[in-house]
Image (tube, rainbow, N blue to C red; front, side):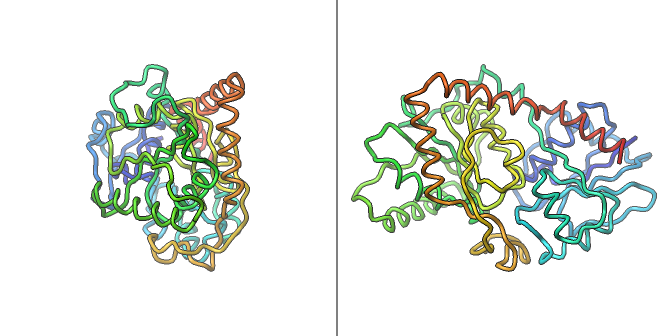
Length: 370
């Protein structure tokens, strides 16, 4: 068994990280994998040393082709078993016409059970397997390098958000919940690491500050609000891990998530997670789930055409439920430290199940049994 793996593993995006981790997971499980890079943007990173080695291998003799890309780019290769890996965050995706491209292949891999159900509802008629994502859990152990710091996050309870500033991530909802629930006098911070496609670090920060000011203006609760702790632009992974390790609870209130790698990273750092119920995060997150309801997609003008239109549904988290979960997390930490410590250990234990080697063996089994 020799696998040609086509993906955007050099892009500094969630999709890029997913492809990279899949390749390294397969390699760790002993699969002969040959990666070939494509790209969707200009945020390239230098290949990891092992990827560089694998890229030197010839594609001759490959009997499986994994295409980890957008379904509309799929093509069928005669003489190979063709597997498509894709992600979507909506309850169906027929409006995108992706099912017509997916059905050209022999098999599809998706990251979670919600996506598998969406495939059934979206006219996909080829076999669909759940292929979870992974991390090198050893990189998130107890000895995290203390190489980055931020003002105001010492000796406080810190909520953490890491993600791109797109409508689907619902940063506005997070700001609403946090500033509604917590008074500036409370020892609680909201730490955000944000990026925005096509924006430099300063422009991203300015964009965020304008959003936050607008939220506070519309809340009309008080004259002064606690300032968020914000880092914008791309960071070295060691710096991001150092900052995340100073936080206590990860929050991802998005309208849809195929997986959410930062949430898994947070759990590997022993952080419980607050997440939207009814999304792909149900499969792996440990912590508190936020009540949600199906809702037509709206406002996702920063996505690809044909995706996240109002003829498609995702799930909308309830702001009061989100605020309540954040309050429960803080009060548990403050008043029941032993219970919170147990939750931290459970989060870490759940993350360990998605270690690169464990998932690599699962992916290898899918290849052998498919």
